[in-house]
Every structure is written in C-alpha cells, then in structure tokens.
Amino acid sequence: MRPTKAIVRLDAIVHNLGVAARLAPGSKNVPVIKANAYGHGAVEVARALAPHAPALALACMDEAVALREAGIDHPLLVLQGPNSAGDVAEAASSGIWLMLQDPRQVRWAAATRLRTPLTAWLKVDTGMHRLGLAPDTLPQAVAALRESDCARDEMVISTHLSSADETDSRATTDQLAAFNRATAGLALPRSIANSAGILYWPDTHAEWNRPGYLLYGNEPAINEGPAAAPLKPVMTLASEVIAVRTIEAGEGVGYGLRWRAERRSRIGTIPVGYGDGYPRHAPSGTPVRVNGVNVPLVGIVSMDAITVDLSDVEDAGIGSPVELWGANLSVNDVAQSAGTIGYELLAGLTARVPVESQGHESRGQSRGSE
Ligand SMILES: *Cc1c(COP(=O)(O)O)cnc(C)c1O
Picture 1 (cartoon, protein in one colour):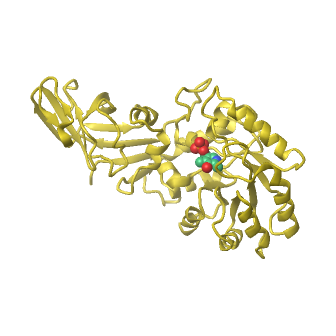
Picture 2 (cartoon, rainbow, N blue to C red):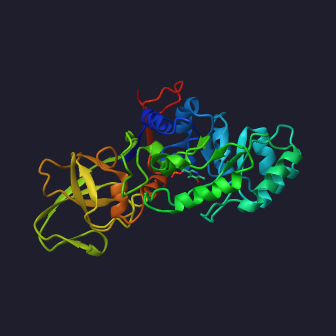
Picture 3 (cartoon, protein in one colour):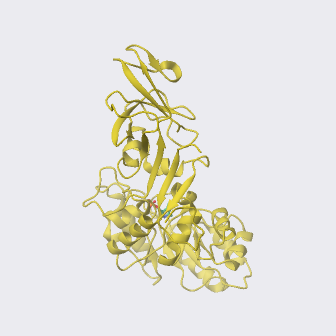
C-alpha cells in the first residue's frame, strides 16, 4: 500500500465538541459533518459524535441519505434544505430535519401531506446574501408552516454569519441586530453561531449552535482570536519519502524545471499530489515535515508527487516519515502558503487517500486500531 493516508483521531473530534460545549454552556450543538466530515470520513465521524449530539448537520439531502444507507439512524439536519417536494416527504419519514431557506422550499413543506410531521428549521438572511428568507417574510413563513400542520411547532430560526472569523469586523454585530429584529416577536429557539461565532462572538451563542471546522482541531481565524481554544489536532495527512537524489547547483526539479538548485541539493520525493488534494498552488517554500523537521517544498506540485529539499536534514532518506499537515504542521499554515484556507484542503482530499480512523469504539465497525 502507498504510504499516503489521512490518520483521523475520532476521540479528538469528540474532545473538540466538548470544547464547543464549554465555550457556549447554554447551547445545544449540531456538529456539521458535510463534505465527508470536512474530509475526515462522514460515517466514522457520525458514529463517534452521535452519542454526544442531538443531531448532525449535512449540506444536502444526498449526504443525509448516504448516512442513512450506511446505518446512521441519528437525527440529521440538511442545511440547504430540500431540492423538491419529494425531498420533504422523504425527510419527514426518515427523521431528517430540513433547514428551509427560500419561499419555494417553505411552499413545498406547507403543501406536502405528511404522516409524520417535519422538523423544520427556517433560515433568514441577515446580511450574508447567500441563502435565507428575507427578514420581513419570516412571520408569514412561520404562520404558513403552523397552519399547514406539516411541521413540528418547535421550529428553529437560524441565520449564517458572513464574517465571524474576522474578529474586528462590524458585520457580525450588524447581523446579530438584524436577526434580533427579525425574530423579536416569534418566541422560537434560534441558531446563529458557526465555529467562529462559538469561538469569538459569545453574543451569537443561542439555543442551538452549528460547529464545523473547530471540531477538526483548527481555528477558523488566521489572525487568531482573543484566546486560543484548547482544541486537539485531529487529522494527520501522512506519507513517506520514496526516492532521494542529489543534484548539482543550477539543475532543475519537476515540471517545467521551475525550481533550480542554488547549491548541491538532496531532493526527496513524496507520493502525494493534487490527485490526492494536496494543493497544486502550493509554491516552493511551503513547509513539509520530514523526520520531524520542516523542509521546503521545491518545484511544481504534480498529480502524484511532490519534491522537497532535504539538504539540511542529514538523517532523512527513503522511508522517512512525512507529515503534510497535522499536529505539528497546521493545515492553516499550509493553506496560507498555497493562498487558500484550511477548510478547502481538508474538504478537498480525494477518494484516493485512505482515511484511517483511530480512537473510537464503534462495535467493531471502525477500520482503525484501538
Ligand atoms: C458549514 C456551515 C456551518 C459550519 O461552519 P464552520 O465555519 O465550519 O464552523 C454552520 N452553518 C452552516 C449553515 C454551514 O453551511
């Protein structure tokens, strides 16, 4: 087997959910496990988190149905709501909660005859202008759902924050004020905070929070918030050096020979590339950890391999352990070097990378050790 794999500590994810709970003691948390649990393996992560959370959140029905088919019977919340009236019926009958984010979805829910009522959340647009009902239409939507008897009374009113990871931005306070105006007369439970809201904006903590990124051990703010939260690292993207050669000053490495050695250099090759989700835009100099030392990436990232300069790590050779990101090399730092965010790197891992989950008893189902 190729040595490249994502090692995932499920117990650390459970720990990080506990951190969210301690930061917002009055809130219930719906862990967000969309996009294959941000690359960590949705089924394994769902099994680990279900005993600790009232529901788990996905982006779309397809993701929720895939978890049902994998045997996850926990309540699931679909953040973008239904794509058809048929989705409403399927959701209601299979314990899937729907976040309704536009008038068409509200009409589908209100018009569908349901044997089991739907658990509906309503989303209001308070300034991000991506999804959500216009604030002045919220009372109508609530009334329509109540009259139709299709939804349970305990609707949760939610919104999404555009800028909570910018700890000095005014946008969050503005959105909070708009949300409070929109929900003032409704006396319904609310949900506002994502990870950044939980970490940096206590005023956004409501009856329900929706932590995603922080569960996976990283903070969303690059310019980091007031106090670093005691999150535990979760994923190590690991590999090994599979080839080493010495080149002379002036010789080039990789496609286009875009990096040239300034001195005699020992070049190591690692079997990971953009075909695995390692970012092609990572420039020479991006840190890669070999034998416990950060060395620079050199040359263009190719589909199946990267090259690094091992000249300063004498004991590194074929078989030396590699950390592309993990406990000792933050995915945020690799992302910053590549001009993106850690979210994209985690969610962008491809199916070629096996996920080895560890640290959770799941009735013999886990592929991991322990
Ligand atoms: C993805 C998502 C979240 C989680 O966001 P993080 O920044 O990962 O915590 C919460 N709410 C909604 C609606 C989302 O789409």
